[in-house]
Image (cartoon, rainbow, N blue to C red; front, side, top):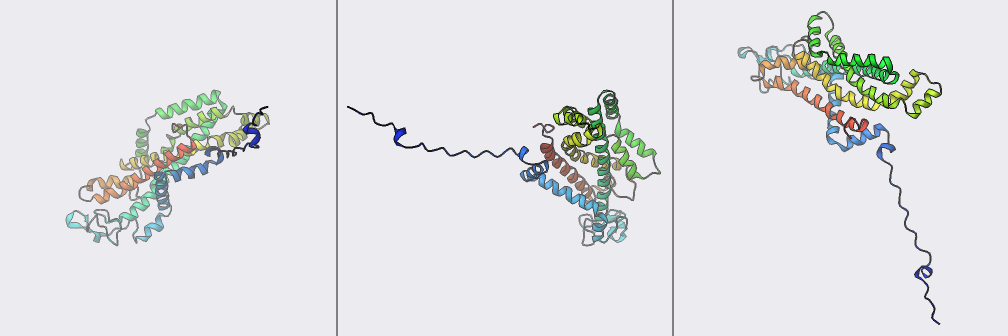
Length: 328
């Protein structure tokens, strides 16, 4: 009588259990908050880190302009006639536009004013106007966009038509006309108001679209059923949902504001002399770009680096905080 050999399964004992697979870590977007994602994006992009450093440098330069300019020993309006040659049309004495231990970036032709002090104080004026106009644009645009998207109806129609009218208006021509006519006013305040007046519709359209997609979410409906009023819903439920795109868009419009201020000053309708600004300095240096290129290069390089840094930083923030806006 032949016996059937036991199967390997009965002789080998209990089958070894397969090692339990470790659960994959959750996606970064669900495991971390937005600011952790921003830090991760900055670590991933060397260009974004460099841009953040440039932005921080010029912001510090503008905030502490009087203290930093004092390190050079000259004020922005002090004349140094010994630094220019009267027999050569007032050109700076020395190489690179008069660069020396006494004048770190050289001097202006004819006047002999210290270029380092002028650039530092020009950063304060240019960035002050740009940041203030951006604040007006963001506050007005966010308020109008949330109101239009949430309330709808006649409110949406009126605000949308106002956005269309403002965007179709020849803003640059109006800015030039307004700055030319208004002579006895504070030019910095006027430029801030005029630039901010025409910048809000862009961000208002973005916020309106985001609000339309948020106002019928479950948590908004729950807050409405729970007795929350419109103002409470807008502040506690809608506003946090649109904050990411607003922050990303803000960093992208700052360079446009800086360039607009520089363009108006370049055209002679911006900040009045002797108050320095980068656009005004570039306009004055055009006549000397062949004989004293340093005078033209220094404010132009500062303007270029600031605009480029804000643009690259804004692109990085947009990819994190508003991926749909970045084409992701």
